[in-house]
Length: 408
Image (cartoon, rainbow, N blue to C red; front, side, top):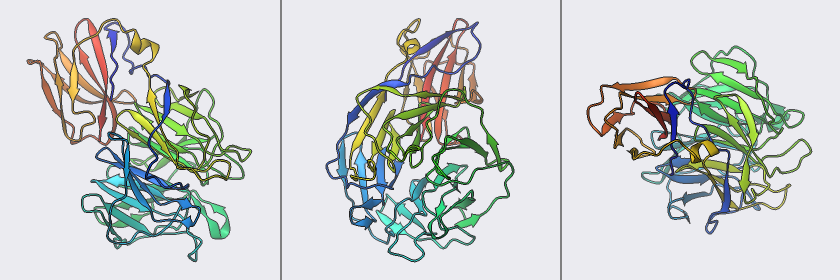
């Protein structure tokens, strides 16, 4: 992962690191990756686990693993049972992958209300007993906040109905619950979501046409709210969302005319603004794909191009520094490791005139602070922080140094 320095004069108001929205698309390995659409993926310890989907033979239960460090695919030997399905969703808590919903027309009803768990530590699938209600549906989305999985929206094929359901799974007690919510969430399927500062942003989807709506759910209050945005978000469904350097990248999808989309829209939650990704290389047009962020890069896998063919394309986007980041006032030797980090990380080569260190979320809220810096190296404990992207700042009388920090 590359880190770009932004030095801010002390008299400048407190702002977040300027983010670049340009870069390079390149092809990554697809050798060993099965062509499919309606798949899901999850990241555990820097590897991307790609699960389920629809091949030329129908719904599948394929699990393949992509390692970005070696650019290779492997197929693990697994035990236990995973139900073939597509239009499913997944989430990671405690290093385990929770897979929910989807559809399989070889079953009746086709929409699944099953939850199955994959443990990468022993390559085992399991099906926990889950009291409470999980509504069978497909083309839904999920997000993790405070170690609970929020499963949102989706479609019920039997009645051709888009839903606005929110159901919550708590792995601590293997129980489903249905929160009483306020505000308005538009029923839809083919939506995608991302977590920013413990709030769930829901993008696009389909309900009588492709949508360009964005709505936000706050699990702390169980309240839905609309977001007033600037810029343009292309109406799309069956797209994929992931967070990279504090920005949400919405890749591909199907547009209002039923065509696969070859663009990526980028949402900046600090300004509630949209922009269209400008990149060297071409993003392959596709819908019903999966995407993941690993090591400061965005990976897009699989999908469907205008309903045929089914793809096994694997592309990687590497962001380039913005003009501000490229032409900083000065450079410095500050480094941090490891990054991404799971518990503790160390900031090294701190200047003697630094007075304090701040860690901030992507909306600018301080979540941790260290004062009276007396050494050139400082180790911080991140255990209490939720998984996501943060910024750390080294503050001295004459400058503010800002860097990106990723908590896995």
